[in-house]
Image (cartoon, rainbow, N blue to C red):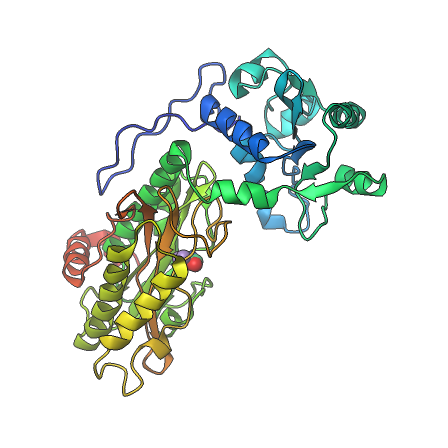
Length: 451
Ligand code: GLY
Ligand code: MN
Ligand code: MN
């Protein structure tokens, strides 16, 4: 049953090279998802209502998708991030209604009624009833009925007049009931700016999921370094990576895996992964496992044959030093923009003659950082000064197409009260560490010669 996703205590802080034990499935639902952190989700709902002066908040879950939908290979259901953030519930086509009444904040969860015929095809669903109330921590769980939902909203607005806040993109929604409300003349406003400002600072439950997603991602990097060898195809390494993801309980990839060798190392988001890797190639591996709706985003660059050439090492060490200079500077009060300037200034000042007279920054052709969370490029205002609990990437790169030489080094970094914690620290980063791990892989025999 994959209709409920819960983030339980995931055990102590991870050892650098291991993935923590999975959460224990809940007894009532054998084989179910993960237990919901009830209090954390209640606190998020309360914090949201605090920020809404008047009116009601209505959040639709993502719609169910079928294997006959337009994008055939993508019928896997993934919950809407905002709905998940506020409920931890993975059920499709559900609704969440938050209101302020005279008795205080009210929460109503609407779940589709059970449909045994459909469940025979696609599995059991969390349905309205006592079990749902217990598992979600929401006492008022009702069978989904469009008329009942609308009258609950109308009743709430009468008590607390104001707009209906919901998920709108550029003022619009592709959700049929919401479109109908627009036509009926209700005043609709987007709730996403408020939710985005909350999501940019991660709470403990979110950090547990992120730590696990990143630990699995790190494990896959180590597996890729051990397995890579000349003659192997990029897709074979992609298979090693994604096998590692699923073996450790990741739900899916957070974005298409980038495995770019030789000329492809200079293409920023190359994810075709069909080239046969050659002796002497550099390889950029930019990957992220998704666990409990949160994704890692970690890049390592390494030589396919296990040994950096002098030229590769020189460029690599410049990118590595820029990555470290930024990590040393991450602390509350800094902005992503300031970190980007610092990275470029550092790289330029230390380019020497490596990239000719113009310096190496002209080959650093993308931004330095983005927020990380439920989205790989997560929501949130990029002008905000850093605060403890924010998670960002630090990913300088140099891409020289004429030399088929691309290097990106990307870490995931949690802002703390006086600096930062590098969550992706377990992925080897110095050229020595990488070469050592790759030598271990070479010793493992058959794994490297499966061509
Ligand atoms: N993996 C996409 C990025 O690093 O932004
Ligand atoms: Mn990134
Ligand atoms: Mn990345």
